[in-house]
Image 1 (cartoon, rainbow, N blue to C red):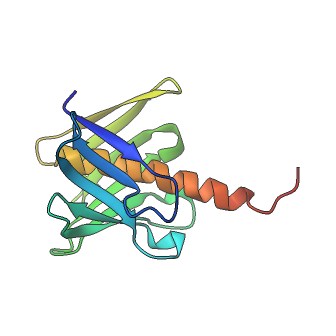
Image 2 (cartoon, rainbow, N blue to C red):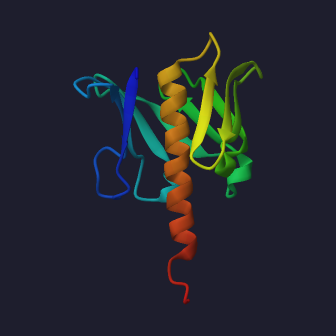
Length: 146
């Protein structure tokens, strides 16, 4: 393995998704909640703990897609498709393909990253989308009776 990921579904956690070396001794990047509101998305930080950008939903429904936007340049990577089924395509603002995510059964998916994309950022975004979907499904079921 080249890297590993760790999750925390606790809203109080400082780091919700961490992408690190396979041995865990070097953190490549991580996400934390961008704000108290779930719609704020996840703030993305680099290995030096500098803010890189934000991952957030592009609309109220998962089918509207998700975007990573750089805090420095405004550059954007958009994810479109069916995030719940891990069927996504990532592209930049000009529509150039950056990555493709494809499910292989219920437990596995492949992430193919093109030469113009940062593989770590794509993987971190895909894991962040999963976390946002999980948080959204918990919010939808909160307060319902069996």
